[in-house]
Length: 251
Length: 209
Figure 1 (cartoon, helix red, strand yellow):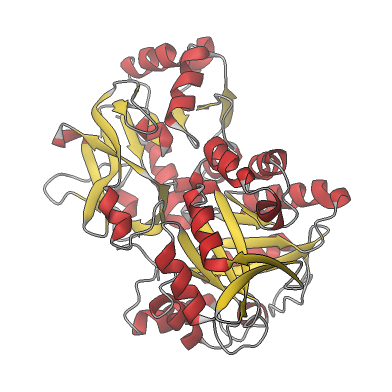
Figure 2 (figure 1 turned 90 degrees about the vertical axis):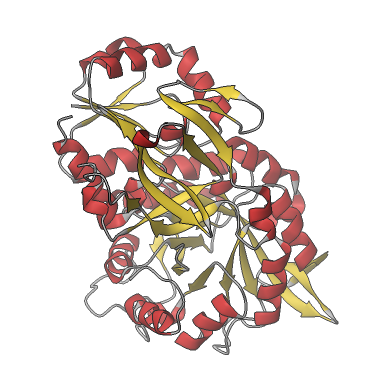
């Protein structure tokens, strides 16, 4: 049976992991290779790296980092942040990424997603959707939730799936950072609307939140950052909890 | 020396690194005339079927590969490198493949996504080896393990003898592994399947069909 995936997310800047990774036995917490190896040992199903600076000057550093990580861990890697054109996607795939996440550029040029899926295959194209509740619906935001786009998030996710995105990385800007759990109604609404895989993101504080994202939210995978970074839970503990709830996971 | 076929598509880096990790020496081959100088051949694949077969034909690699496989060189196909072995693919039209394994490449049934199964089939799933046959030596290390799949199309071999392992997505079974003689090919990505995948690659390097 297809397992539900658990994906730790690492924020990077200038090729280093930022936002305090606190694995006990890692000397240099900012080393992306060490962090990747640690998550690999814990049984993570995939890794996601988001370049939070994504400046033009730091692109080569990012490519180099992806190559280094891909030489050490043999699991799927998603990389996002600052992807603007087909050339950026090609460079990341050649560096060793398996999937590339597109965010703002998809909103500015939706056709980019269609072209990318045709050229590199749906399985390599992820569209990141940052959504926030506005009145009686959810709207897409850019720039870390500061800039509204006027796009209905559920309709937008469906359009991106129809354009060939193989996965939607769905972040609730309302839930993000709260530790109160995923936005379940949002996750479920998007999951019901698209044929693409849905990765729930934003708001995880407990293992029960992961379970809720997968069952009530109907997500195919759950992404979390801080609960794993700060050692609150290991991936093993998370999977054991999900398995005890009857959710299929790879143990 | 392992020849890793480079037809100008996708990233061969991960496959090369994984083979090296289990002790293999790898060279990228883009010159069809050199294909017969390797002990083992690996054909990875990402992207579209049509582009892949087109690139293999343009470089003369299709004919060279058939010759080398007829001579008995052990071969591993991965993902699209498996699908390309079939007679024909129905991905974006109808495109002939290498015809080394009789059968077709078809999409998951349309009603599958309507029933809530997402396309592509993406993530960790099983490889069920037939209980009636001796497990294939390359696949044997996978017993009880899950491996990483990402694909929207599946191989449908006509001859049940060519079916070496099965995976089910929902209630839809498809070929996880196929092969005959010196050919073995898998739908999942051993280079992305952590320990289980590396164990398969190691078994491939030890395999003497």
